[in-house]
Image (cartoon, rainbow, N blue to C red):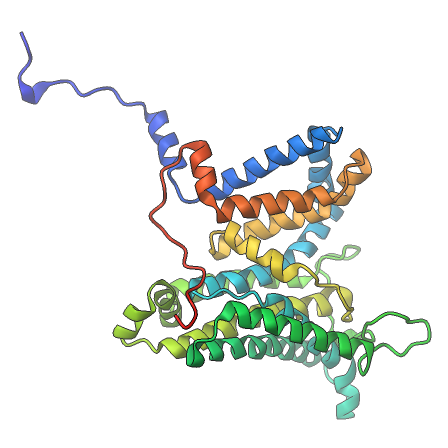
Length: 381
């Protein structure tokens, strides 16, 4: 005899399967699977050229995390990545695509170096150490902000596309830097034959975190700035305006937000972070600006921001991943004779799978996310 309709037994559910399905449908799972897929394909490439993928990845991990010195060097690599990744992520939040981090970083570095070695002589006074360091970082950071504000102004008031403008500004910044380092700012010491500035003074240098290791307080500053950007975006009125303009500028304008001002300010803040990446490299690690030291940081930052889902915490984690790959690559090559270029291939694959996440979702049968990231809008949009 059939049971009454209200008393029919419900089919048993599998709590483990439910948790697994929920995890697979989480937006955060796509970057993880993108990394996993890229590592698998990288392993296949290593095997095809006659290498041992497991030995290669063990060497990579050992070079990145296998000792305190390895951790120190990974943190050094991660520091500019965090600043530059935050720069690109902040612009993304405002619906802007800042490809100019490379040039903004270079200008920040060259200004910080000039302040570090030339300002006391120009003023004719000896600056206190804390003031000299503060001025080096502050003026270098300001240079990056002002350089990024230019394409922001062009975007807001003329409709000029920020992608085109930031690419062009990169060329201008990098050529200005090359001229300065080969000319007026070149180290005039008799033994120097390359394009670089003189060493900055001791007072303009960031202190080391641990004696005997190269990691410096810039890494701690990078983590603090990441926390500050999170607070800015989700706990302040300005952050709400940036996110609203990024999501829908027409709705933002209707709500009373000054869209043009927000666009300019977003680009300036983005450039500020990129400029800070350059200043920290000069004041904390190299103690001078050398032509070509930062090549690739600004473009790697795009991959880092995308991999981190344009969230400050995600940017920190993806920066550490990229830093670990860069730092561990030398040890991997030493142990297995696998060229370090394989790391660039893996990083490119990660970017491919994160940017074209439909590929990852198709491979692993993941439901499409409703969140859409607006990287940039059309000309004059």
